[in-house]
Image 1 (cartoon, helix red, strand yellow):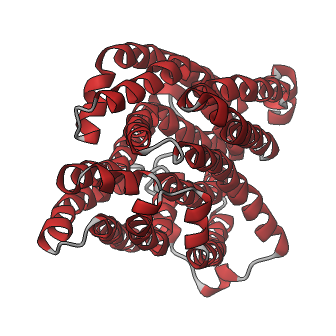
Image 2: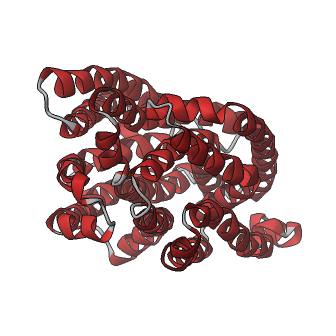
Length: 452
């Protein structure tokens, strides 16, 4: 098998990781811009109430996108392993499995959420005055999840064989289109907040079409035939173990955040807006960390398939050091420019909004080094075959956020939200460190026996 793709099993680990991660970073940045542009344009053109209606359901959108990105990334880890072991037949079957199992899973999840969307918004405590606007916005995005799933599937399959540049190029194009469509729908057609959702879905559809065309013409290794869709039970189990593991890992994290949002939505419009703006900044500063995490899933997957455990160890050490350096940069930024970022994103000078948004960032981002450990270890584990520990860690996060949302927030208000995540992070990281060190890959003697 001699595909014209990039192998992560050769070259200096840190160099190949960074080169692979850079396009993913900019790709994810433009995905965040989808949401950020919506937030900025809605706030500046429609006002704080409209922004609150978007912010009150943004965590539900993040929950769904996180699940589908995790699902397709988990599927692509299996593809990456077959690519690393140079088994083209198994690789093609994994691609077919990703398409078939992913489509079935997407249909079930999307239809279920769409049917029960109004009760879900009620459970989220979406304020009555924003309920209909929030519904008109999120219902478009929910049905548009078929498009989101399709893009994530194409992008992660391309990344599994070493091409992280193609998804970036198409996302840049679609992001520019998204900005134009936002103004067109909101101001030109007077569609309100729903217009921002239509703009997002249409622009994502463009990136899907471009990815499919690219795969068809340039990546025959990802082409499948009818025989590749004849799945065996062993294949289905393996794909779902990896896909659902990463999907659930992301979902549990985001479901916990949705749970916290139910508490936030009871604290008034200004807190909702402050938190929505702060989370946008949080997402941007966490972007390099999440990119390194998804990169390590592919990197470890390829090297696990190639039985290059020495490269897994070296890669993880290098990335953890890189993450520590980024944590120091974020700490400085947090304590200097946070108020300006909150003011810009929320399009407001309201002192209460600026205070709470800035306070959230200063407290939570002071502990970003802990999240670096969590993200890198969880994703690396998925790459080298440990699907249980990451889910257990995510379950701890979910339980912690449930406790804070229903017991702590009522008593301490938004301070309970601010201290929720740092407290939970410290509890989560313990199990991840212990299980990583116990893995045979990190015992030189055992690893050498397996490699030999």
